[in-house]
Image (cartoon, rainbow, N blue to C red; front, side, top):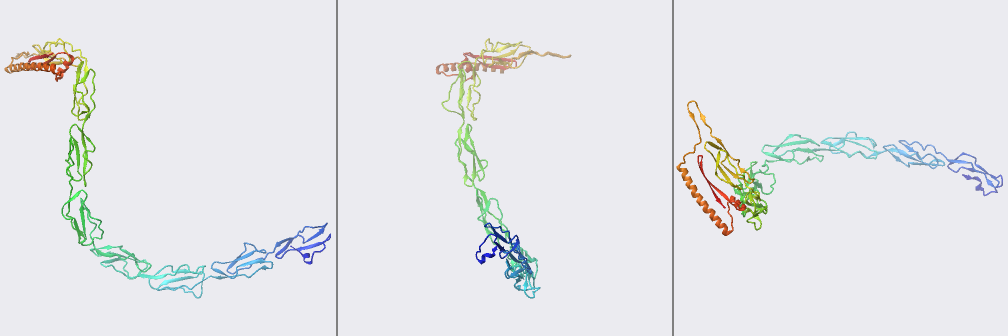
Length: 559
């Protein structure tokens, strides 16, 4: 707002003095009073309200419009916007002044494109008549070849064309030596046309069988060739491998060599084959397995080479009886010889022998007990039950459990009904004593005739029985069968004489053992006699001769 009086110099504002205001340039009065009055040395309040003036519409733009989003009041701006395909000619901004919109309404001119280019072997089917403007479509066609690219070009809003101009292209007619076309016979070939080739008999195609006319008027990929048919891949032979890595094609006359596989050696023939008339010659190379020779000598053992000693064979180590293998027992014949090392055969060891109560080992081992060692026991008291001699076996254990020294009170006095004792009359019977029975006349023995005093103080096996002989009678003839002692034959007499001689020899041996024992401090090796010596009892050695139901029984008693 502006004070009209200030331009005339400061007046003398007395009580009741009134002044007027008006709106500044570009503003218009909206409401209120433009006057204020001096009252009691104070100015009254100004109620005048001034708003920006409106410039109204900035005008109409042909092929365009004004953007008045900012407004149409004093100080605002309107921006000209051309329609698509049109471009501004002149200033595109108008400002709202105190006097209205400044400047002039701009012009939107249509976008122009340059004249379309000509193409070789082609033409524009709708040549423009004058300037080419936005939206104009230019259409091409080929007089020769094929049109490559877009046949329609459009003038865009940017003053250029929608794409590059097309081209008219084609590929030459081609042929493959020693081959023929099976598709695409031509003679004119346009872009993307194809030809399929095949080779004449006796030739093979090298490359792809199909080519296509490319954008650069050349066939893609390269044309194939038909070559004399080579040999196929080198054949595979047993025990032989190719030398190096020969590369094909294997044309006529191409030669390759083989060598024996690892572990095999050449025995005969040629290592080479040749490609002739599309076929490989036959390989005459003969490869045999190489020999590894002897697998070695094993102390206390040997190698079993029944499988052989050639490449791929195995030799198996076998230890002698009583020896055991340490290490691997198998050697393989490899290309470089026998693998591994010669194993060791160690003698089998047994644990220390077990001590027994009331007995001793007469030959206590000095150190480790090995295979074949005998351990001999004897009793200081009682009867030795079991094997007195234990042997360290090939399995690392003993041939039997250790014996035991057992108290023995003897076996009871016995008799067989309707029978008699012919050996072992008693009356006392100790462990190992035996009795031989015979039946009385008219009775037959059932069971064994001899029983022995066992370790459990009973007779073994069970006592025999004497049963009455049977008698058979018929109506015509009565036959009575009675057991009658047969008359001794001369042969039986010879047996008795021989037995008496044996008794004499046995007596001499017993006396010799007794004499030797008392001088050298040794003991008898007969097991039963050892038992008697251990218990302090006598020992009876039975000597028996029998003829039918007649028998001669003699017991030699040794104290």
